[in-house]
Length: 239
Image 1 (cartoon, rainbow, N blue to C red):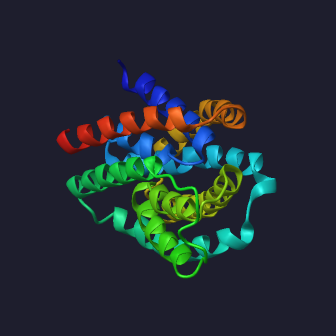
Image 2: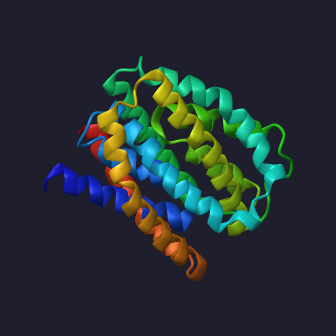
Image 3: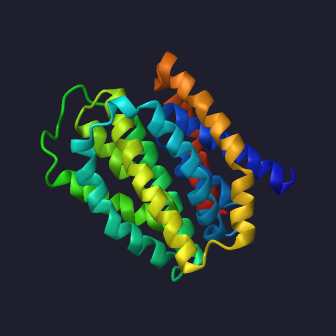
C-alpha cells in the first residue's frame, strides 16, 4: 500500500478516535506513523493536523468546559511543552520510538481504568502534576493525553465535563506546539504542506466521531481501540 494512502487511513482513524473519546489522536497517529516515516517528521505533521480535530472537539463541548478545573492542568503543561519540543531535536530515533511505545501502553492502561467515585477531590497538586507530565510528552511526542485522561478519571467527571477539560488543555498546548515547531525550524514547508492537505479528512473523521460520541456508549469502542494500540506499541518496539 503506498505510504500516502496509508497516511490518509491513519489520519482518518485518528480523527475518528479523537472525535469519539476526546483524546487518542496523537497516541494512534504517532504509533502508526512512526512505522512509515521519521519520528521527528511525524511529530510535526501530527502537531499541525491534530489541531483541527481539537478545535472541532472544543466547539462541540464548549458549554461543558469546566474552565476552573482546566486551568491548573494547562498552566502546569505550558513550561514542559516548551521543554518537550526543544528535546525533540536532541533525542535519537531509538529513544523516541521507545517513548512512543511506552506512552501508547500507558494510554491503553488508562483507557481501561474506570471508577464510579472520585478518588481525587481537589485540583492541587494533581492537576498541576498531570499537566507537567502531559506537557512534556505532548511537546516531544504529541502524546500528552494519558496523564490528563487518568486525572479526569480519578476525578470521576462525567463524559461531557471530562471531554471539555481535555479539549481545552489540548487546544492551548496544541497551539503552543505548532508555534514552537515553526520557531524552532522543525516545521519545514514540505511538512506543513503535507499537514494542510490532511486537515479536511481529519475534520470529517472527527465530526463523525463527535456524532458517535453524542449517540452511543464509547466502552466497546475503547476496548477495540485499546487492542489496536497494544498491537501498535508492540510493532513500534520491534520495528
